[in-house]
Image 1 (cartoon, rainbow, N blue to C red):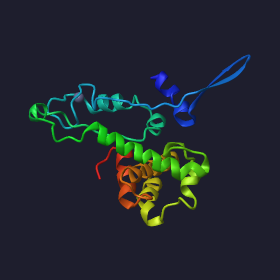
Image 2: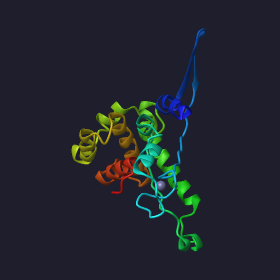
Image 3: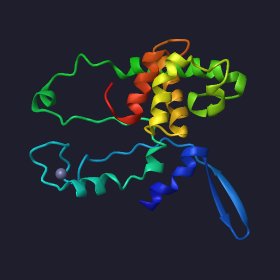
Image 4: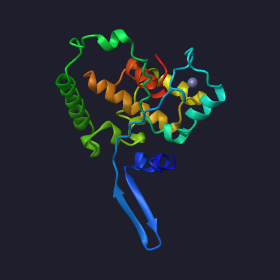
Length: 196
Ligand SMILES: [Zn+2]
């Protein structure tokens, strides 16, 4: 767990700083962190008849991922258990990876073109103040769910900027010039792990 907590700084700053008596060294550390966890120590989802775990055990298990660490996680996706029918199904209708890869390339190119004026290449690199100021500031109507979430404590100030970056990425993937209300809502629901 301590190793996970040590990732907070590189996740925020994209570098690792090591301080010793003889000086301080900085190493580049831009990384993508993917975490996976069961919903319960017994691995069954909430409300499942097979789970006999006391609520306290469940809370303690999920509490091992600290709030400050989770505040740096942009996407939370809950996966439903796979059914036998899904396991046997032919996935011939699924979108080929090459098509998805093409869409990602286009989205990254759109972001790189937009942020070139700031010397940035991707949505993830843009500092929060730029996202909140003209000309990239989104209308109050579009960002209202974010303001509400910030005011109720569901979202931190850091989380607010992270949802904005995610909304820009969703818009880029869909070929829109800037995020609309749907993009912001989708980004917020991906961030909080709660369905729209
Ligand atoms: Zn359980």
